[in-house]
Amino acid sequence: MKDMRPGGRMWQLYKMGGLTPAITSMFDVQSAQQMAFIRSMLKEQRKDSLFEIPLHAMEIVVFDLETTGFSPYNGDEIISFGGVSVIGGEVQKDHTFYSMVNPKRKIPEDIIELTGITNEMVADAPELIGVLSDFLEFVQQRILVAHATGHDKNFLNSALWRTSKVSLSHRVLDTMMIAKWLMPKRKNLSLDSLLHAYEIPITQRHHALEDSLMTAELWSRFMEEIKARNVDTLGDLYALLSHH
Image 1 (spheres, rainbow, N blue to C red):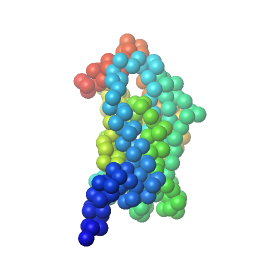
Image 2 (image 1 turned 120 degrees about the vertical axis):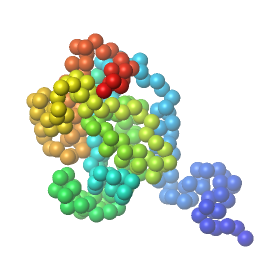
Image 3 (image 1 turned 60 degrees about the vertical axis):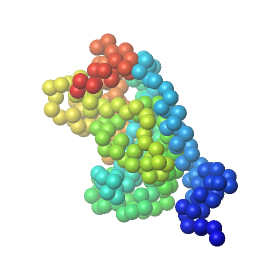
């Protein structure tokens, strides 16, 4: 008698036709395709060394996530992705990404108040694997940039592992670390404080796309200062940031 438990059924299908049919049978076709795309993207990313890229031509995506809380390993979920393309120091305002995500759980009241995203707004939003796949398609092989990256990296890694059993392989730069290097005596390195210091207009905080656009403007200002310090490549920048 055949073993029809999920694990046994997966093994039978694998023996008959390989892993892709097995995965497809356990999930819907679209999810299987999205998982395969995510795994392929991250595998490709690991092939290229980016350290020789000149900063004036470097292509990045500045991104931000809004979430239901602070712990992706304790039940908190992503509720929106935002991103904007930047080449060198030029913000590509016509090349952006934004999507809400259905977190499959209630959004706490304090997060609703902070982000303006309600349970009704995410009820018909796409599921995590679909938005994650679309976001990585937008990012391609470009370097990721965010402010105070720990939070966003943790949630991205958790999402990638849960949906596709892979970890983030893109290089991630932190504008907070760059600010620390450029302004070693400055105590307040929050995004609000830095936006104020550089006289960058604050549009809408805690909105994934708006935060991405404001952080991209901050990156653009930083690029001017970095260039003035004769830092020419990504490798040079990493070497300097490693001391901070």
